[in-house]
Amino acid sequence: MFREAADIAYYFHWGREELQKMTGKERVVWLKQINRIHEAQKVQRTAEAAEQAKMLLSAKDEQEY
Image (cartoon, rainbow, N blue to C red; front, side, top):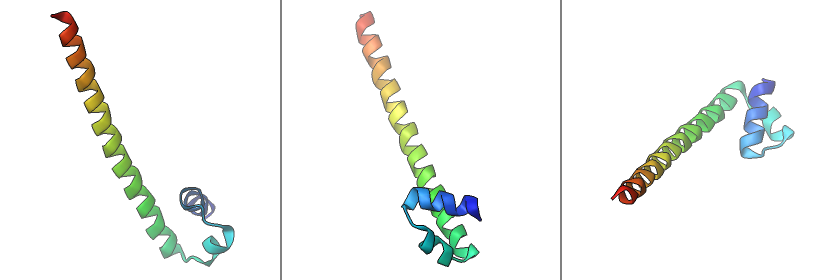
């Protein structure tokens, strides 16, 4: 329970009182939302990294000509 509460408090900035009122089921729902957010951020970072790599390779190719 402490780990769940700590994760939720960290990501959503909720206080102890709010977290203590939650049921275990509610904590699981919010933790799933945190995981969904992480996955979306990971997809975004991957897309950005791929775009940067593409730009770097393009710039390198231009320098070789």
